[in-house]
Amino acid sequence: MWTTLLLIFLLYFFYTKWRKTTIENIPGPKFAFPLLGHLPIISNEPHKTFLEWKKTYGPIFSVQLGHLRTVVVNDLNLIKEAYAMHEPMGRPPQEVFERACDKKGMVFVSGPVVFEQRKFFLKCLRKFCYEDRGHFESKMQDEISDVLAKFGENDNQPCQMEHTFNIPVLSAVWSFFMGGRLDCSDAKVKYLAQCAANFMSIDGFAANLGYFVPVTAKLFPNFTGSAKMLKGGVDLYDFVDQEWKKGCPSRIPGQPRNYKEAWMDKIESAPTDSSFHPSNNYFPATMGDIMLASIETTPATIDWAVIYLARNPESQKKLQEELDSVVGAIGLITLDDRPELPYMEAVIHEVLRISSLGPFGLLHHTTEEWKFKGFVIPAKTCVIGNLYAVHHDPEIWENPNEFRPERFLDESNNLINTQLIIPFSTGKRFKS
Ligand code: HEM
Image (tube, rainbow, N blue to C red; front, side, top):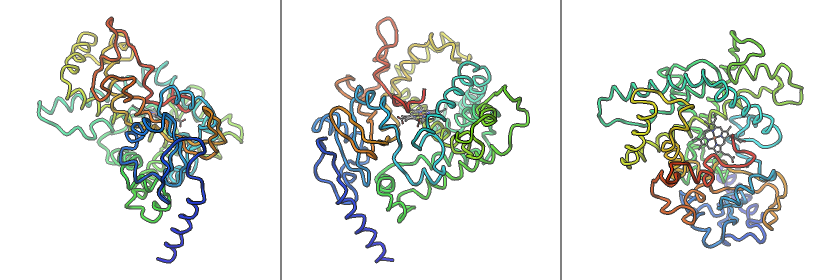
């Protein structure tokens, strides 16, 4: 056992030594640890370290993160330019993601299939959540009413906010995908939310180690969290698979009411080489990973909104006054109210900016050699657009760590500066 471990270590050591760790002519820290690259020196908050390193190396630099040769882009316009190009549109290989979704789906995979799946997903999103939004909006309002009723029961006592929003968000997303409403008190539903949380729990040095030095995830699955992630992913995809197999007894072909019914229409005419062809069985993976992309990010953003508003009572008061004047104290908000709620829009933008909860978004990967800004970046290089750096750049934002929704409003209460934030990323893998 120890001899095998030593052999693996030595092979990996020489492999990383042999492989170039820096990219010619791209600035970056010179010294890199064998196996780990720059991992030990980027801290638990690499997005902050990279913003700091911008001062030394400029807006584009190269680092080695475990086995991944990486280019970091730290500037709004450069990220927009980079992500509009096709070469950095892949995803780096990641065993846990690939094993959980069987290398299928849309979010964690690369290649033309992503764009086929995205086109369909965005069309459905537009149709069911915007153009014909009556059904979806009323589901959302049901969820909101339930959350408000729970707050009402609380009788002004301090309360635990954790997990307040994830199940209602899961339920709303579920209605877009599958139509029906989930029973939020059902243990199975709570387990589903927990699976998503486990799958997305990539945090801290141990998890970075497992992600960027895959051999450690194999050797120490519990320490690196890869076992928990894999189980969360596999259980979630299985759950979706079971729901898919139940079919849609009340479906009328050609008149889809949700993503699953639209998918059923689509597969009827899909050619064999399409990812929609039934033999490819793409639905569970695609739906599973869209759920992963949505049911952790959205509740976490609402959690941050609650925290920032609690800590900034002046903003909270202004927001309450605006809502009271537009929808009334007991009314429920709809998308049509949006133009009348500029302060609320400003609060949402400021929460997305300051929290930057996916500071790197999802990692990108070059699918072929990429010429960018005079640099020649080889194929299979990881590309990180540092969204946090954009949102906290002192050259763009005055006192970036201060919560101030007013930075998104002019004197006449018109929204401004919204194009300066990219919390949902940008370019070809941006979701809307
Ligand atoms: C506040 C909430 C959210 C934030 C901050 C957020 C942020 C992001 C970011 C930064 C990416 C990476 C894009 C890239 O690779 O460059 C992403 C991808 C994605 N998000 Fe979200 N997201 C949120 C909510 C949602 C929701 C509600 C859905 C679905 C209903 C969703 C679906 C997706 C999908 C499908 C992708 C993958 C796109 C692709 O790989 O081509 N997200 N999101």
